Image (cartoon, rainbow, N blue to C red; front, side, top):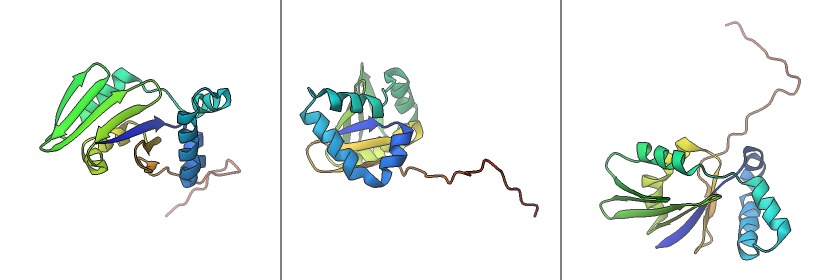
Length: 152
């Protein structure tokens, strides 16, 4: 089984690093390998958000695919359908999950997570896989603060 971690990135950093995912990936890997470095710890704490365990479990329970089964054991979830299986462990700053293929997570887990929060960054712990769970929408901001109206 492959092992992945999901991080909730603050919106401002998600917008900044959406097209620079490689930089965010390297930072997370560096932090994982050097957790004793205070500078990396502070940066990691600053750019990530905590997962609200109970509301996240409730959300996934209410939004998992109808044709799948789910079992909740404390901070752990198991989602399965036919031969597809995902095991999740929700921690303070990340969700660890295991699945045979990332496609299983795409079908059984990611739709519920996309409804929960769009700024989730996924890192493969065994493989060099990483990316955003959804595209980060970069809205054009009106710099003058004025609103234009059209009468059609």
